[in-house]
Picture 1 (cartoon, helix red, strand yellow):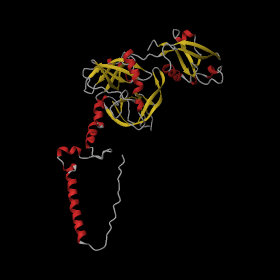
Picture 2 (cartoon, helix red, strand yellow; picture 1 turned 120 degrees about the horizontal axis):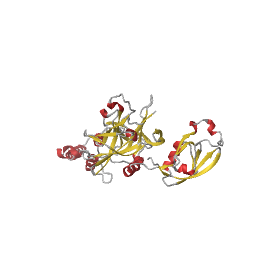
Picture 3 (cartoon, helix red, strand yellow; picture 1 turned 180 degrees about the vertical axis):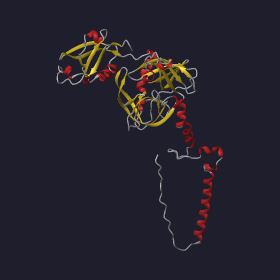
Picture 4 (tube, helix red, strand yellow; picture 1 turned 120 degrees about the vertical axis):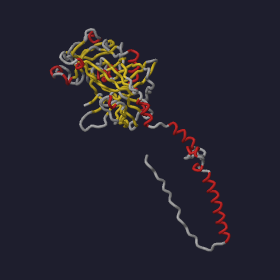
Length: 409
């Protein structure tokens, strides 16, 4: 079931063997030995008093010199600079958490005239990330399923403020939504990272509100388990194959819409779903931010994602009785069966009918309804002309359509 919602290395040097030399000792050798000892002591004291341990306490920040590869000189200044530029994980999380919000959406349930006034309303909670501030407005990205169907959306900021949010745009298929709030008290936004540069094994942190606001801004740590995973999800707009980042950072209901962050504190994914089956652990998934960015920008600009609209309802072969497929040639083993046609749509105007079997678009073989949507929404756009390969009463026919925008999107 899918819920949406350094090794220490010791260098061991062999000690030189002591060699005892037998023979007579002359005065000259004794003098040479004593002189060598005195000179050696002087050199030793000179080196000791010039090492950092004997310097002033004010300069002990540079107590560990390193050898410069080019000159052989110490470069403790480089170490100081490196330390100044290195941010701890806790510091990063503290800063990133300021941009993660709690979202509470309220929607109507089925009316019950005998129920108390508030009994016909339901609340659900999730997470979101502030990614942009413009003028006096702040913008939040979250999951569509966190706010879908909501009549009222409330955002809880890190400082405790509760603000009413305006829905700017939402897209069910990609499970993304953008909200807008009053940004007067918003001081931080999270920068986008580069999800295309991620590799398995990189450290990541998930920040969100598992199980509600009681556990707000919970931080879990893990790694990128895999990139470019494809997960089949069922949405209110139909089945969809979602491209995701897999992580073992703990994600639970309420984390939906929250942040998956790299070690630089950049947003690289929107936590969206997990595998929730008995005996299964550490299988969480996030929408890559590089996939989300163009959709977010389009929602801010147009309030929606404009996709081509064919105007048909359909089912896969395995969802219909065998008798409806008997007239098809044996080589036709995949496609979709049209169950209804919008007469004012491109399909309706082209002459498609209920029970037609659609097997290809522009010579691209159609496997099922999800495959059709993926082709339609990623390879084609509004205004494109498409050639449809259809079987009607067992005979192949070709239809030509000009794709329009979905009037309901």
